[in-house]
Length: 399
Ligand SMILES: *Cc1c(COP(=O)(O)O)cnc(C)c1O
Figure (cartoon, rainbow, N blue to C red):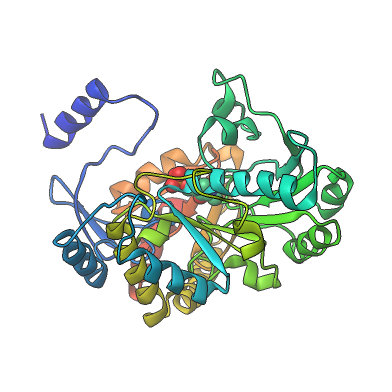
């Protein structure tokens, strides 16, 4: 039996079956490339759902990791550490917010944003306790906790995990009139993604975010933007909201914030919002740990130094045009922004999964999302030559 088979079998034997991975076993990664246990090389076009925007093992980021690991890794927030404040300052400066609160995973940051909104509603907006409502969008993806799946519109994410958390209202995505109709005096916030990544790379109509910003401002409702996947350069701007000058009241970041090496997330907000938290209200043992913060600070530096947002923009346009140029009869639609691109397969040609499997055989790693869509989200450090290499193979599979 091959090593690959052995490891896959062992995984099946000992792990929960909550994933359906492609049948390869990665052993090593560098830049945009990964190598499996058989020594075969693949171009990573998924980059861990955008967590690897800097590529695998960016030398500067690894250097920070190793350097910090040789000093201190974890202090808990019971004490100060010498890395958290410099990281948060950098994050606040580059994103133009007053305050940041660090967590570990994206899901935790979303939960943090929801808690902030609820308490803000009580203390600042004067909505009676337990009456506040948060509006979310159909087809959203914000994580996997019980509260977050409570407002998912995906039956599978919810089935069997009830009772669900109340206090959420679901409206159609991309429809600002539905938003305005849904707002009541008890509405605290609207939570949404600038582009629905997990939902199939759904790009809302132009002007939508701008209008959401206007409506929320008018009604004293917080706009919470989940840029865990779209943020930090992915869509060709540092943040996707910049396309429409729709700076949210609470910005949620994760994934690439940890430079592809360490879980790190955060929410950013004004002092007015963040001040609702007082000691003991909220926390995390690992949140703000020095290892994460050292890595996060370097990840932000690399992002700016290498101008990854501009690269994502330029290469995104190039990639998207070339994909359109393939003129595949199998393709329903190609959509996205920057280096977050979805290729939707027409239902009569089956689901996206077998195409991902064929691409894997040709040395390209990507993953289907929402049955019909292949998502291409390579590390932002990818070059045009590497995109060309990918395109040749994509054309082979889609022709
Ligand atoms: C990945 C993702 C999350 C969840 O992040 P985790 O780190 O997996 O908890 C939340 N929102 C969006 C938009 C995401 O893409």
